[in-house]
Image (cartoon, rainbow, N blue to C red; front, side, top):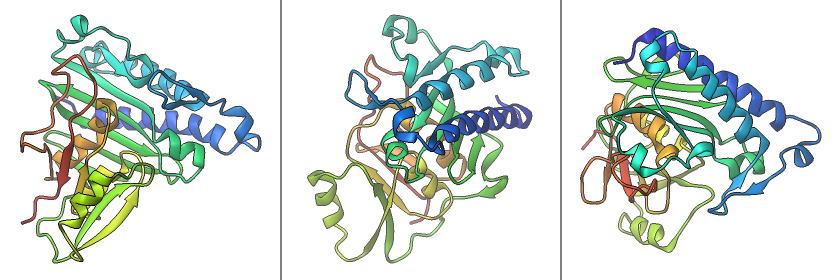
Length: 261
C-alpha cells in the first residue's frame, strides 16, 4: 500500500518537523519560548507541538503519491473532527507532532515525532523520529522495520530475565501490581514517549505493558514499527489493538511484546 519512496518522503517530513522542535529545544531562552499551555485534558501544549503539526500537515499534502496525499489527517493538534465524519474513514493519517511533551519540557530527549498510516483499523506504516538523538524508526507492511536505515526485528526468544519497558512520567499501583507477578525475573527499562514501543521492535526490550491512558495518536506509528518487526500489540483480552473503532480516541490498556516464547 505504501512504497519505499513514499516511506522515505515521510521520513524526511518527520525529520523536518523534528528540526523545528529542536530549534526551540536548543534555544537559550527555552523556558520563555515554549509557552506551555494546558489542553482540555490538562496535557501540555507548546509552540513546538504546533510548529511540527503545521510541517507534517503540509508535508503529507506534498507527497508524490496523490492518493495518499489526499487522505484525511487526524492529528493530536486537530482532533476536533467529529465521530460522524471519522467513522467513514477506511484509510487515513494519524499523527502526533510531538509525543512526550512532558519529556520535551523536562529536556530529557525522550520525545518523538509520530506519523502513521491507518488502513482497516490497523497501522500499516509508521515513522517515529526522536530528534534529540537523531534516531529514526520507520516501517511499512511488506517493507519491514528499520532503525536509521538498518533492518530491525523483535526478539525471537525471550530471556530468563525479561526486560520490561515502562514510562518515566506515568507509574501507577496497577502497573506495580502487574510487575510484582514477575518477582525478580525482570529488569525495568524506563523510557518516555513512543520510544517504549520501538524498544520492543529493536529487541532492546521484551514486554511493554501499558496499564494507563494513551491516545490513538500516541501509539499508532510505533505500533506499525512493532508489527513490521515481528512483535505484537494486543489488548488485555488478547485482541489486536485497533484504531478508529469508537468515538473516544483513548486506547484500551494493552501489552506490546516480542515474538519470542
